[in-house]
Image 1 (cartoon, rainbow over the protein chains, first blue to last red):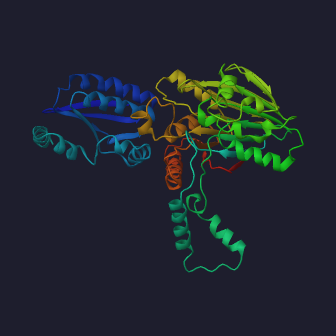
Image 2: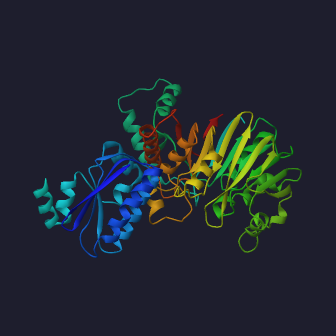
Image 3: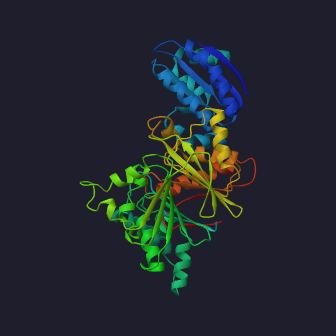
Length: 125
Length: 319
């Protein structure tokens, strides 16, 4: 699994690519750790761009849930965007689509989360 | 081993079909039959056989009790839930009360839903019968005696006149019982629970209920996969959704259909049987979970297809 991230004002767009299986989940957890630690209290958030993720296991979903709990504890948000069809089904079957916010695209997510970030995202696009 | 027969498949608490539930089934059945004509009972049966069990039947409501038909003369069961009562009635109807039988019963743990059937197990009251109860908890016998003590139950354990024997097994050790190779495994559950792997005549069945598989540690996951490895059937605790098991019901000691598929695929299991159904789920909800689990198996498959079923009271699996 590959991982990269971009900052738009108070929002980080994190982009894992590949399979988030047991090994990938560990990599995702490690990659997210500094981003979650740096996210400021009470504002902003993290958008996980899942356009390049073609599978996520229960361990990967658990990593997302732990990250969401950590963010919510500080009044910040973490959402998921641009799921591939198979991953969309996995989210539905596991009921994770009812405990994590899911958006059809990164643009839709960033528009919902932060006006300054949306402006910065549009300017960069 | 020849066959698995389910006498109780519900988790935590027995449930019964409600009048409203029966009516919903009747409405759906009649709607489906609209415009059809049936010339015989055979045609009616054929129509009903084509319907989902949520419409034409029910998953049932007895708490865990599963029979393994070994081909030998002794009976083998997993757990003493409320399903033990109809099993006992069926055994007496088959042999008559005057024909002594031997029953081997493996207990996952002594939470109420897994032992509540024993006071209603008629063969245990009949002298001459032999009831061999196996488990890994040292307090197995005392827990079963205690549930029949005053004021919890009016008939004391001492009234059970069959020859009742208790054997505490050691997890990880191989035992030869009733012609089967039996191995127990410690599972994550409040007060611990134990899964059982049964091997005989080239067939393997794993009974793993009341077990929370988190899969967070690779070593633990590999250990479980090894326990399931190449089984013909894994009877799996799929009580919660993964989201529930990861959030509000984390550490409640139960697993999900998603984790069941992952573990069984890794272990190259041939048949995953969803078990220990959530009592809050009606038949439609269980059928929906079954359909979704089959779909998950399909979209995540990397090897041979795996059969996925949801256990119901009365279901039989040929081995």
